[in-house]
Image 1: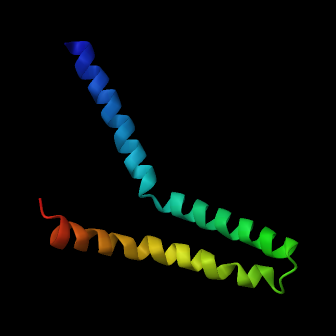
Image 2: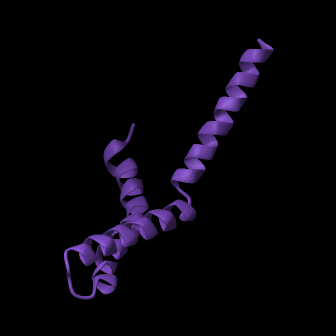
Length: 83
Protein backbone atom coordinates (compact mmCIF):
# COMPACT_ATOMS: atom_id res chain seq x y z
CA UNK A 1 0.00 0.00 0.00
CA UNK A 2 2.82 2.37 0.89
CA UNK A 3 4.58 1.64 -2.40
CA UNK A 4 1.41 2.44 -4.34
CA UNK A 5 1.07 5.78 -2.57
CA UNK A 6 4.70 6.64 -3.30
CA UNK A 7 4.21 5.61 -6.91
CA UNK A 8 1.17 7.90 -7.19
CA UNK A 9 3.11 10.77 -5.58
CA UNK A 10 5.96 10.34 -8.07
CA UNK A 11 3.51 10.24 -10.96
CA UNK A 12 1.81 13.39 -9.70
CA UNK A 13 5.18 15.16 -9.54
CA UNK A 14 5.89 14.20 -13.16
CA UNK A 15 2.42 15.33 -14.27
CA UNK A 16 2.81 18.66 -12.43
CA UNK A 17 6.23 19.20 -13.99
CA UNK A 18 4.86 18.41 -17.47
CA UNK A 19 1.97 20.83 -16.96
CA UNK A 20 4.33 23.54 -15.69
CA UNK A 21 6.52 23.05 -18.77
CA UNK A 22 3.54 23.18 -21.15
CA UNK A 23 2.43 26.53 -19.74
CA UNK A 24 5.87 28.05 -19.13
CA UNK A 25 7.13 31.22 -20.77
CA UNK A 26 10.46 29.46 -21.30
CA UNK A 27 8.79 26.88 -23.56
CA UNK A 28 7.00 29.63 -25.51
CA UNK A 29 10.24 31.56 -25.96
CA UNK A 30 12.15 28.47 -27.15
CA UNK A 31 9.41 27.59 -29.67
CA UNK A 32 9.26 31.20 -30.90
CA UNK A 33 13.04 31.30 -31.34
CA UNK A 34 13.11 27.95 -33.14
CA UNK A 35 10.23 29.04 -35.37
CA UNK A 36 12.01 32.26 -36.24
CA UNK A 37 15.33 30.58 -37.03
CA UNK A 38 13.77 27.82 -39.15
CA UNK A 39 11.78 30.36 -41.15
CA UNK A 40 14.85 32.58 -41.62
CA UNK A 41 16.79 29.60 -42.97
CA UNK A 42 13.94 28.68 -45.31
CA UNK A 43 13.58 32.26 -46.55
CA UNK A 44 17.34 32.61 -46.98
CA UNK A 45 17.52 29.38 -49.00
CA UNK A 46 14.60 30.46 -51.18
CA UNK A 47 16.30 33.83 -51.71
CA UNK A 48 13.55 36.01 -50.24
CA UNK A 49 14.48 39.63 -49.62
CA UNK A 50 14.96 40.54 -45.94
CA UNK A 51 14.51 37.04 -44.46
CA UNK A 52 15.36 38.29 -40.95
CA UNK A 53 12.50 40.77 -41.10
CA UNK A 54 9.96 38.63 -42.97
CA UNK A 55 10.45 35.77 -40.49
CA UNK A 56 9.09 37.97 -37.73
CA UNK A 57 5.55 37.72 -39.11
CA UNK A 58 4.84 34.02 -38.33
CA UNK A 59 6.87 34.26 -35.11
CA UNK A 60 4.74 37.14 -33.86
CA UNK A 61 1.67 35.18 -34.93
CA UNK A 62 2.78 32.26 -32.77
CA UNK A 63 3.44 34.53 -29.78
CA UNK A 64 0.05 36.21 -30.17
CA UNK A 65 -1.68 32.83 -30.35
CA UNK A 66 -0.12 31.80 -27.04
CA UNK A 67 -1.35 35.01 -25.47
CA UNK A 68 -4.91 34.83 -26.73
CA UNK A 69 -5.62 31.11 -26.43
CA UNK A 70 -6.00 31.13 -22.62
CA UNK A 71 -8.84 33.66 -23.04
CA UNK A 72 -10.57 31.45 -25.60
CA UNK A 73 -9.98 28.35 -23.46
CA UNK A 74 -11.62 29.99 -20.44
CA UNK A 75 -14.53 31.17 -22.60
CA UNK A 76 -14.96 27.68 -24.07
CA UNK A 77 -14.90 26.03 -20.63
CA UNK A 78 -17.37 28.48 -19.12
CA UNK A 79 -19.81 28.91 -22.03
CA UNK A 80 -19.62 25.78 -24.18
CA UNK A 81 -18.17 22.87 -22.20
CA UNK A 82 -20.21 23.39 -18.99
CA UNK A 83 -20.10 19.92 -17.41
